[in-house]
Image (cartoon, rainbow, N blue to C red; front, side, top):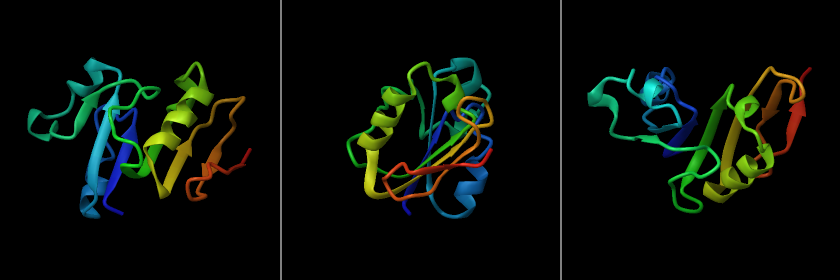
Amino acid sequence: MRNVLDLGCGAAKFMPFFEKRRVTYLGIDFSENAINLIAPSRLQNISLAYAEKLPFRDSSIDCIFAHHVVEHILEPAVLISELKRVLQPAGYVAIVTTVIPFGSLSCGEKSGFIGERTT
């Protein structure tokens, strides 16, 4: 894995986890206030953007990590379509949410977005 996109990265609290694994960390968030919490020296790969309109080329992301983001999206189908667009054909998506109606989803299937409800 070369890169990971942290969808709704906020203050980028997962950045150290991925950097320790020598993976290029890419973060996006729609909240300028959240991004402003990140040290200026760490903003190189952070973008102010909406998850439904990602600023990445098609098939350019190896792994997408969405920790408590999906429940904030008004049209999840639009989000999933956008994730599929930027994800590499053999890429991975990890979606974590605990809000009904989504339940807690675990999506580990390669590019298939096949999840398993764990609630």
